[in-house]
Picture 1 (cartoon, one colour):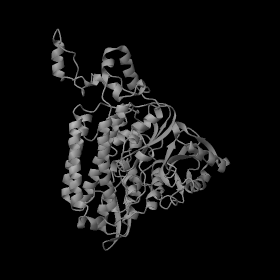
Picture 2: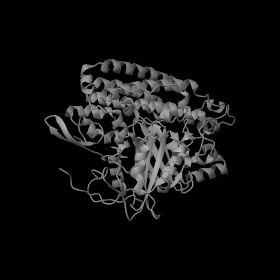
Picture 3: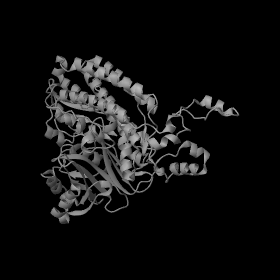
Picture 4: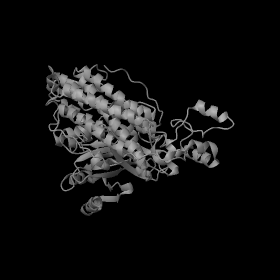
Length: 159
Length: 424
């Protein structure tokens, strides 16, 4: 019961900034606008919610839908024993979002991974480079329009 | 250092800027084992991608299976029989022990204690004997299936498991005696790569590494799944968050895992009568079937496909749509054949409702989470894995900062980096 409360309170506090809430399959989800990500995350980090842990950042490519991309953040509150999902839709025209690397240190690598796989730009990120793929790799492999078996030319051996 | 350096396990590259032996700056480069796991999964059916999850953390494949399978079960909303839950608990605790054993073995070996490696590998062989007996494989098991498990525990598992528990306890005792107060080991691990609890949380650490800093968080306790809430076990915590604490927490956790296994062995429900029937080898069965008047009912031995219907009630959910139909039905009745085809045909099979779901289990390294987006078809629209050691490795640069080159080795060993899981 308490879990519902957090979503309700968020709704009251940030009334117009929250687009939608849901709890399908028991996962509490909040869909927000891109501009308010930092504010809401900072609010959630404080007492009494204490969502101090960033579990995961990932992205989903809904090709053919507008907005095409959706950023997905999973937060964990150790004191409330609760996980919260925050989703931020991103239009293909403006693929940039605020970086959380200054708030959570693991966001640094997580955002690099998302940039690597989806090509989303994070402004305020200290060092936005590819993480898993090599420099010189073309395209973003986890996008839906990247073919499964596409091959890329080999790059010369590094020294 | 790396990607293939004699003193490091796993493919990772650490570029270090040195002042003499002291590390001024470093950069960790990962991705040498990136296989496009998530992209591949988007093109496989829910049933077909299960074996791929084995290859993530290859030391504890059963926990990887479990994480994926339980995410799917949450999405499909299915209940698993109690016996299957106990089997899952036993198997995942065994995997956890083998994971910790491997981690400490590698860590100690790289510090020069080669004996530890041999002792731990010995214990791991006993553990894997149990796993092999039941699942038929040592590493790539794929034993835990959506809706239950592939087969019941082997009829003679108790004996082998008891032996494994005794042997593992002995090894743990030996290793404790060799390492706990060992001057060389202490010098290389005590107060090296100290991580404060706040930093650990900020980096998203979970599992033994987080607990070594003194933060109480274990998915098995905080978000209990399976029958963990019926088990009596403790969560060992560290104090300082250095390499030694990470070693110690892992050692203590193995003891707790053994306790859980012992309890589960006692509590596991007895099989239904059908499963107890003694089977026979194929040659014997064929011979008997040729006789005009067979003496007894012909039942194949339990691990051979063809006689599994009786066991299903214990180990698999009743929901027919998510479970491979029993082979005897497929071969003997038209309904069975149709349901078999419906299960394996393209765009049929397991089709969860539209939506997205996140579920996590306690893996060997921490919270192993799966995030699956379903669009209602038989393939996942998006599958993302929250790999626990990814977050730990993200902090390696900070951990080794200011230490000596030699300190990189035990630090790297103590966090248990698994390339398959991190790079996906």
